[in-house]
Image (cartoon, rainbow, N blue to C red):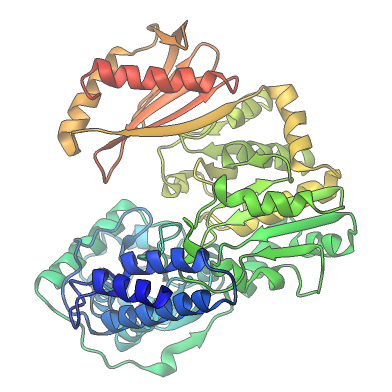
Length: 575
């Protein structure tokens, strides 16, 4: 019966000998559902698994042979270029984008306007310093990385090849080997059908807008002309790179700044019979490092979940989320150790979420905890940096500690002005870094920081959070969004009508009048109310949607803020 179902699915989604007309990932998703609904080791399970492998074989052929332009125009944003595997990401298109990056660097010899942002002055310097190249667990990542390497070495650029690695370790490697730039083939937390191309310049952080704009311009020109780079790769220019080893070296170099002695923390965990750690890798790149990160010592107190390679992610959305935290929670609740740390990490390990087995703690709250810990327990002094859509919990802590707050718009690259000054940089979407570490968000530093908190204070994260909240107040962040009929400039023009909600205006929140005391407009419109609750409205940059971020002072108050945001959109004619 299942064989017939599989053949029906193949007939429904595939067009023989026509990659462009075939919906490979629609098919893979349905096959994953069949597999998940079958008993392990059953004939049905085996046949569904074999069908998935068979379909990925077709995807691989599309990656290798597709010479059509990407179905969606190449666009480099904060996190690089993303698109569908095979349809957008093929050897042909990835080679063109890699050549677009080479062209940008070659132009330095005639026009050095980007030299400061890139951190290099000449193309010869780029060739000598080279590039770090890696990929995450996405299907075809190794093939795409090889094409990037072929383009770079054809142009005389040394390559430090890290193979499958994480965003944080590749960033660390860029700093340690002093590379000119890095390329990471990853779409981060996007669904299974996506590939991605992330570019970082010599500072190892997310590229500035003027750089990503130039790459986009060059790539579109090459693709529009139908030009494919001529390849004459030089394998002697390829050096093997231990990205995790570079990360460990960077941790040791930064200990005087952040106070996190990585080697001692891991040794303390291995000696602590009363502490257990559960890490859900969600089949991503962190699985290749995790045991090494903990010293490669056999331990029943280090529990790895979903640590097998699986480009389908078992059919789940591969991101830190409440549904995905369930395995971590149930695992920790069954353990006898009094001190428990659970984390879930996305595929390229630039996002992380925490639990103590009872309480889920996202970055809205953990970022404030991290700042408090480094300041009060490690004796470090400095400002805290958080994106404007992130909880004001950290703001309250910083004010109480008489430290400054840097609050830019959404995007980790916005922290560039305070890298090396801020004790902690974090954002609402579960990304974090600390002083003396990478300028890129990194799940591993979050994991080590949380582990040090528990081992040093002999407290679970929830207990530490309660202690800080009792002193600085309770904050309950949330988010939402709605689809609207407008997009682009017309949407921005309509949202401009929100200017009427200025300081001093009283709005209804859950049946209670509340006065707006402050308005921040650095990214959408964030309206802070008299009780320090707030709501923020900003347009999506890619879709006809308006996103809401809000924070109440009680759990029940979140509904009133969400309703108030929707009422504002209705009043200006968007709903």
